[in-house]
Every structure is written in C-alpha cells, then in structure tokens.
Amino acid sequence: MQNSSVLWPESVARVQAQYGTENRIGSLNPQETALLVVDMQKFYLEPTSTNFCPAALDIITNINALAMAFRDFGAPVIWLRNIVGNKDIKSWSSFYDRLTPKHLSYRREKLAKDGDGFQLFEGMDVRSSDRKINKTRFSAFARDASNIEKVLGEYGTHVLVVCGIVTNVCVESTVRDAMMLNYEVLVAEDACASSNERAHEASINSMYTHFADVTLTSNVPRLLGLENSQDLEASAA
Image 1 (cartoon, rainbow, N blue to C red):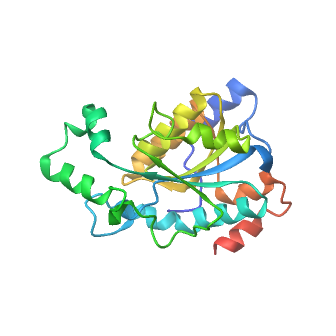
Image 2 (cartoon, rainbow, N blue to C red):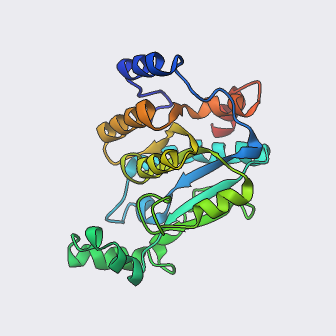
C-alpha cells in the first residue's frame, strides 16, 4: 500500500464546507489519546489462512511506527484481537448461522483463545507495556463485545487513533461506534488495509465525511507535538 491519501476531492470539499476545515483534529494530547490497532492477527496475516488479507502485510511498518510514537509520548497502545467462543457463536447467530459448517469450524478453531490464528502476527512490535483487548464482534464498542470502554476510562481517553484491518469491516465498525459514543476519532489511512482496494478507498472516504478525521501516518508525530513529522517516516523505513 502506498503512503499516499485515497481521499476523494469531493470528500475533502464536503468536509471543508461542513466543518470549515479539511482536518477536524489539529493536535493530539497524549494524556487523553490512545492508539487502537485492529485485528493484526495471524488469522488475517498468514498466507495459509482462508481469511488472509495480503495488503495487511504492507501496513505493518506504519503500524509499528505509530505504536513507537505513542509509547514515546506516553500514550497507550491497545491491540484489539478478534476471538471466537461457543457463547459468542450463540449470541451472534445473525452472523455465525450464515457461515458454512466448514468455515464456522475453521473460524472457531483458529480464533479460539488458544488458537494459532488468534495470536498477534509475529511482525507486529508488541511490547509488555501495551494493552490487549479481545473483542467478539466486528466493532469493539458493540454491546458486550469487549471491555474497551472500561479500559479507555482507566486512561482517561476520549480521543482515538485507529488503524489495522480490515478497513471496511472491523476498522470502520469500530470507528463508527466510537464516534457514536462521543469519542473523537482519527484514522491513519495508510496504516489500514482491506482485501479489496476499492472497498478500502470507499471506507476511508465514508469515515472521513461522517465519522472521523483521516490522516497519513507521517502526520501523526506533528499532531502529537513532534516538530519534525519526518521522524516517524524515518523510523518506519
């Protein structure tokens, strides 16, 4: 994935007209901001998986650079992990009942708490100081999907920088619900990926016009107060 924006001119014009600015978030306070990394798990990043998202491999460097920047500024880094259990299959029957028996069995095995696919991909720079939150729905903020609101409350967080996979499903679902719960949300678009580039592009524009601000990874240090935003690009090289 290229480190360039996929925002459409008409989306930028719409936001400019509605909000009076192209970017609603002009700075980030580390004391009230958290980085949410969505579903960078083996289930989606291992080429042998039925749910492999090839483009996810291209955003690892940007995500790791974001995580480093947030740690440097004393802001929490939170890794969201999709998990499947028998209780979840029953309580979310509108999704799981539609899967073929083969795919359901595979998903249940690989995304179980002790499943290989549940683990974060080995290329991710995960530190012991980071938090990990399991979620049972596409959105971490869906009812009973996770304890994310409790964890964010512990940090005093009300601004979220979101990245991960896949853009048009779990990332967008989490972003939409977070905004509806009155969190300020910023999406690092070149640290998100989808199995379909057109779906990624449409999702980024939908989030930008309605639910979140959108920026490139290289802009985040400046928003955190680092004068030279190229420092993050260098660390991601």
